[in-house]
Length: 273
Image 1 (tube, rainbow, N blue to C red):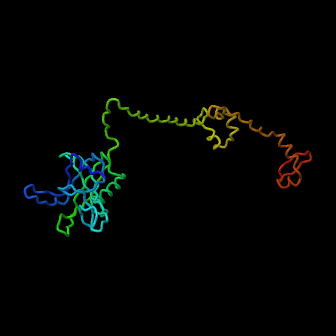
Image 2 (cartoon, rainbow, N blue to C red):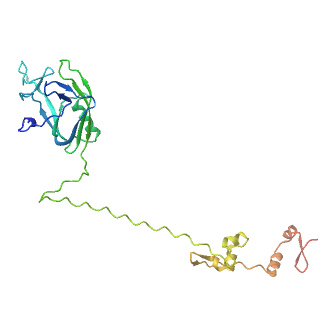
């Protein structure tokens, strides 16, 4: 597996340490320090190298060594890191995350940050930052282990695209959204009830004791509903005196007794008393 830092040009690393250029003494930066930037090269899994010699590093008995095999000839596990190159005001810098599943380690915390952002991996154009949250002393007396919290922001999908070079195929135009459908007009309000010249409606006359047939017969305008004239049936004719006499003559003597009336010899009916 190739190591990008073994190439013709090395990328300086971002670290949480300060090294005195005169004494060479390295000390941790203050808690709360942040390092990172915009990703310009996708993360890559590489084998760590020894400072100075450039020899590959391996794990043996939980310690790093340049020996590829142990004393029994058993291959040692390569010491791997995930390297991400970011853009900073000082230029491009590499961020090294040693493979680890421990909480607080740059590798584990970066994996968490990517998941929180809803992404699958750190992508070019996104931003990766580490914040120093604590230091764990090294039992062997070396540099303490750094505890960090990672922050990842995916690239902006709506960022202004770069100007295409000559001969590049332009992207297809984005179709315009469909026009909204026409809103139907509200229904017309119902027409007002017709009235008589005096201002009475059919309901007014019915409330006063008229039948609907009598009211429409007297005022045809009351039979107009929504422009249509309703022809009312003719009201029944009032009974005449002859109709009443015929009805009384048809009554039996028992009916007359109940009505307190009596029949005269000429056939007419008169009240009793």
